[in-house]
Image (cartoon, rainbow, N blue to C red; front, side, top):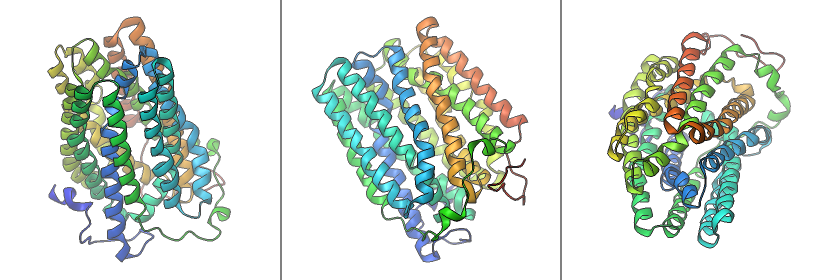
Length: 434
C-alpha cells in the first residue's frame, strides 16, 4: 500500500517504461505534473461541487430545477465529446488543447458563476448558474478525448494500476481536507457571500491545476497521423460487443447514481436538519474511505485485474441508496458515505483501467467519445427521472429505484463479456469484430 501512495510522486520511477511515447528521462516529470494537476483539480471541485445543489436550492430552485442543474451538465458533456474527438485527432498539441479549453476557458466559468451569485437575484441568478455550469461541462468534456490520449501516451502500461491509484489517492486526500472547509465558509459567511468566496477559491485552485498540466512533456505527433487513421463511425463502434457491454453496464450504474445523487444532500438539509458543515463532514468521510479504497484496491487491481475489481465493487453498489432509507438524523448520513466512498473510489479506478484496456489505440479518440456520449446521455435523463420521483413519491422511492438500476449494472458486468481476450487484435476502421 505504501508503494501505491507514493507511486505518483515518481521520485525515482523504475521498471518497464515500454509503451510510453516519451523518453525515459521525461517520464518522472510527466507523472509528477499529471499527479499535481489531479490534486489541484480535486481541490477546485471539493470547494464547491458538493454544495452546488444547495446553491440552487438557496436561489429558489425546485426539485425539477435541481435535476435540471445536474442534467444540463450531462447534456453539455454529451454534446462536447464528438467535436472533442475531432479536435484531438487534428490538434498539433494535445496538451495545449486541454490547457486552453479546459484549463482556462472552463475555469473562467467559475468566475462567471461568482459574479452571477453576487450581483443577480432569483431566477436570473439560478439560470445563469445552470447555464455556466453546463458550459463548463461542455468545455471540460471537449478535452476528454485529448486528455485520455495524452494520459495513455505518457504513462507506461506496466505502471498504470499503481500510478492511477496514487493519483486518485491524492484526489481523495484533497477532497477529504478541503470539502469541510467549504462547508465552514458557507455556514460562516452565509448566502450569497459564502458561495461567492467558495467559487473564487475554487477558481484559484483550478488555475494551479492548469499550471501543473502545462508542464507535462508531450510526445511529438506524427506528421500525417490524422490523415492516415480513418475515423470510426459510431455505428461501427456499436458493433463491438465487448465494448458495447462495458458501456451498457457503466451507463446503468451512473444512471442509477444520478437518479438519487443530486438529492441526498437536499434530503439531509431539508428533511433531517443537516447544516452545510455536516454536508462537508459527510463528504470528508466519503473521501477518507475513498483514500483507503485507493490504497487497498490499487494493489488488488494490479494483481486481480480491472474486471474482477469492477464486479467486486458492483456487488455492494446497490446498498448505498438503500442505506439512506435508514438515515434518521444528520450524523447517520456518515454510514452510507463510508461504504459509498470506498466502492466508488475502487470502481472508478477499475473502470478507467478497463477503458484503456478495451479501447484500441488507433481509434481511441472515437471510442472515448462514444463511451462518454453514452454515459452523459444516461446521466442527462437520470436527474429528471429522479426529480419526478421525488416530486411524486418522495425521496425514499427515488433511492429504492436507484438501487434497482445499479443492480442492473452488476448483472451486465457479471454475465456480459466486458473484457478483451488476451492477444487478440483490436478492430480497425473498416469494421468492428467481437
